[in-house]
Image (tube, rainbow over all chains, first blue to last red):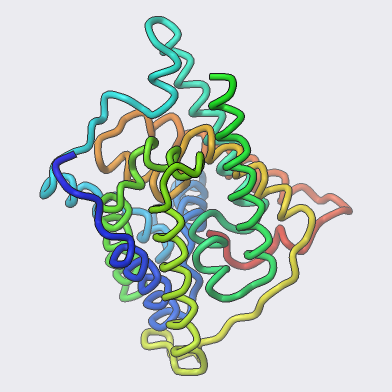
Length: 153
Length: 148
């Protein structure tokens, strides 16, 4: 990477202000899975009249493209533990593994009523008991599974 | 129009921060989930703290674009939600990315994200199919207005 990691005490508050901005301007809860849902259901009914949530995800992608153009791209030849564990012909396994992980992320986030942004960030800041419980659950599960992967991979 | 523009602009800022904070990198997420680096937790906690204070400052005022009174209601946790959160946690740990970073991985040219993105689309579709099925044991959480 050609850039340094932005200090957490700048990055965190800016993200928090994004939640406040969506609330102050639209009185809505910032959540990225809601945007994915908007796009997925829009594609299914062949309508591209997306609401603000769908546009948020488009903005997210546009922002990351802009950042990459200015700061340079990351090392996109590897993908974390997957490309170090699955090498040679086994590398083909990464595609179905990521696909399956995606299904768990999508289905899980919808069932939980939000992902890391909707429940973790916005819901926790709203001090919603449902979001606080969901956040504690997904953080502890993800930590446990990461240690499990480290032990077996 | 103004609502969509708001979504796009705030989304772009969010995306830049996710890239700049290294969240696009599976190794950064993995290092955090293996409790090797405190960055993600400090980042996340300071974001929640800022939003917590900010939300309380704007609560009760008039939303600038919609004119409604800024406010929200909260709900107690329900078992299906926690099961969903656990399923989400498993996927997060495998891919070392959640929905925001998956989108910014695509923007940064990490094409592995196309598989994760396809999976998320399938997972959301599965959920909406299950939700639409007229089952007697339908939970309130499934019809919660917003999902993030």
